[in-house]
Length: 283
Image (cartoon, rainbow, N blue to C red; front, side):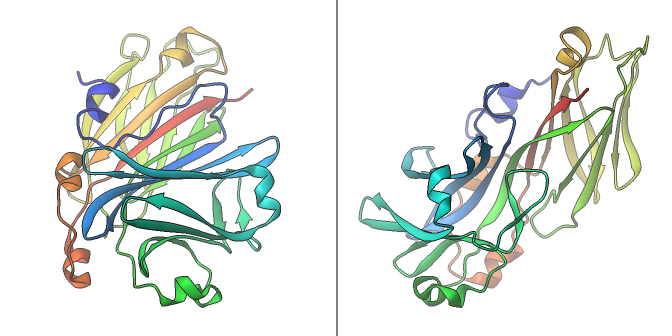
């Protein structure tokens, strides 16, 4: 049986781990992007703390070396629109954000009415959001970004049924994931996972199989599912379980690709995806 460490190590996309106490209101996404004609990984972290929203961005090269990173502190979000410059060997990368009209759902990540962009030498490394880019001169002059999300980590909360969404290939369908596990007063709990309301995995005798992995099929492609519900069963009623969904070939191969200079060619690639869900039980 594979574990989470081996699944994410040695070239896989590293979605940073957070402590169970301090990182519960966090969404972290990793994107495969192009910077100066070479492949890079951009990690965007949205978090919610007592002082408000926070945004952190880091850029790593194919060897996982950190090229630059920055953080927009919560108190800086009083200026909901602005830019910062990150120093980079051979030039700078500008971070541009506009959250003045951002709308948030239950989590720390805005769902609409915003934009965040990374621009290097009038080339868009990454553009997120739905606001018109013409509102910022540097962004309006930048070329189109072909960055692809390749990993996501988020925290979800429920008593029994946990929900999330994922696109397991970059040009594929957005799927609805449902994880159901009732451990309250149940002598022999079981785990059930559905994709678009269709049951794809069921684990009975969960007390003996609280960790495991299984390959399911989504869109005709294999997706490996790993689960660890130990804390749900053997610690506290509000413990955290971890689920991992991973599709596609190894991320190491993706990161070693050279960037395509042809936008149409770049969009024909079918990139896999890694989703990590920290599922917290609520009272």
